[in-house]
Image (tube, rainbow over the protein chains, first blue to last red):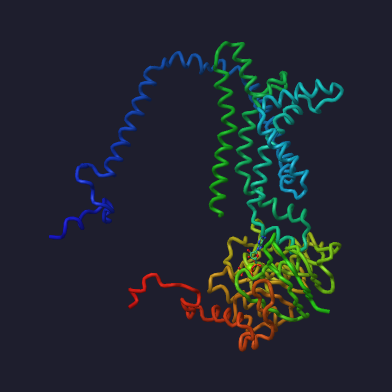
Length: 287
Length: 263
Ligand SMILES: Nc1ncnc2c1ncn2[C@@H]1O[C@H](COP(=O)(O)OP(=O)(O)OP(=O)(O)O)[C@@H](O)[C@H]1O
Ligand SMILES: [Mg+2]
C-alpha cells in the first residue's frame, strides 16, 4: 500500500496542501458549509418572526389605501413627477456645463484658473445642498433685491442644486480627462490640431465615455436632491414629488402618499441604476 | 536645404540632461535610423523635432522653418511632419476611416468626399482598405500601426518621424509594419526612424546614427556603423543587441550566487 500521506487529497482530487492537524474532525470546507447553513437559519428565523409579529391589516390600512393613492393621480404624475424630472434635468444640465468648465480650468496651465476651480470645488463639496438652496433662493435675493434669477423656482433649483452638482461633476470629468492616455493628445497635436481642437475632437469624447456611468449616478443623486426644492416655497404648479406627497399626507392623515411617492422615485432611479450597471459592464468589456 | 537641421540641441528635464548638444541633419529623401541604448535620448530627440518636447537650447529647422523660434506657427509645421508612435495612439472612439479623415477635415479643411478619397488611398497603400469601418480595438497591433502610418500619410507630410514603431508588436507582426516602411522609403519619403530593428536599419537606412547618453557617438552609412564601428561604445552596443545570448555574466558584472553547483 502507498504511503497514506500521498493519498490525502482534497475533494477536487488535487493533493491537499497541508496534512490536516490531528484533532480537528471537520475539514475546512465542511466547517465553511456548516457556518453558512447556520447563517441562513438565523436569517430565516429573524425574517419569519418579523413577518409573524407584524399587524398586516393595520399595515395595509396605513400604507396601502388604494382610494387615497387613487386620489393622488393624475396630479402625482402630470405635475409632481414631471417637475421632479424637470428640476433634475435642469440642475444636471447646468451642473454638467459648469462642471466641464471647472474641470478644464483645473487642468489648465494658467495658475489663477486652477486656483479658482479648486476653490470652487472644495467650497461646494463642503456645503450642504440645502444651505446652498437657501442661499440661492433667499440669501441672494435679499442682498440684490433689484435682480432675480430668471425662471423663478425653476431657475433657483437649477442654480442651487446645479452649483453643488457641478463641483462633483468637475472632479469626475477631470478624472475622466486624465484617464485618456497622453498619447491621444500628442497624436492629435502631431496631426496639426490646436490644443483646443484636440481637446474637443479627441480627448473629451473619450473622457465622456469613461465618465458616463458616474455621471448617471450623479443624476440619481440629483433626482433625490430635488426633494429639497420645497424650501423655496413651491406652488401648485411647481410642486415636486416629496412636497406633493407631504401635502397629501397632511390632508388625509395617512402615510399612503409617501409610499406612492417612493414608488415613483424608484420608477426613475431603479432604471437609471440598472443603466449604470450595464454601462459599467460594457466599459469593463471594452478594456 | 535640409529637411531637418538640428544644431547643438539640448534638452534637460529638471537637472537630468537628456540631450547634450546634438548636431544632425537629414536631407530630403534620406532615411536616417537612430539606434542606441534605452534612455539615451532617442525619443526625446525625435519629439524635439516636432516640439512635443520644448528644447532647452540649440535650434531645429524643418524645411527651412525654425521650429524653435517662439513665434513659429507650430501647428502649421506639424502638418508637414508625420509621426508614428510606439503605442500607435489611434483614436479609440473613431473608426479607422475617421481616424484618417478627422485631421484632414478639421486641420486641412478638406471636404468630406476628398478626405475620404485620400483616406481610402492611404489605407490601400498600407494594405488595409477593407478595415475602414473597423474600430482600432478590433485590429491587431500590426494593423493598428499600419493604420497609424496611413493616418500620418493622409496629411501629405514632407517627412515622417518613427519612434520605435515595432517595439510594442508581437514578433510575427513586426514584418508587416517594416514592409510598409520599406515601401515608403522606396518611394523617396524622408524618414527619421528610431528603431531596434537592426536588420531594417542595415537594409533601408541611408545613414545610421548611434546615440548614447544624450550625444551622437557615431554616424555613417550602415555598412560602416554595423560593419566596422569606430567607437568602442558602438561596438559594445551592437554586440549586446545583435548577439544577446553571447553576453557573458562577467561583462555585466553578474556573480553566480552558487559557484559550488557549477563545479
Ligand atoms: N517627460 C519626462 N520627464 C522626465 N524625464 C524624462 C521625460 N521623458 C524622458 N525622460 C528621461 O529622459 C531620458 C531619455 O529618455 P528617452 O525616452 O528619450 O530615451 P530613449 O532613448 O527613447 O529610450 P528607450 O529606448 O527606452 O525608448 C530617460 O532617462 C528618461 O527617463
Ligand atoms: Mg524611446
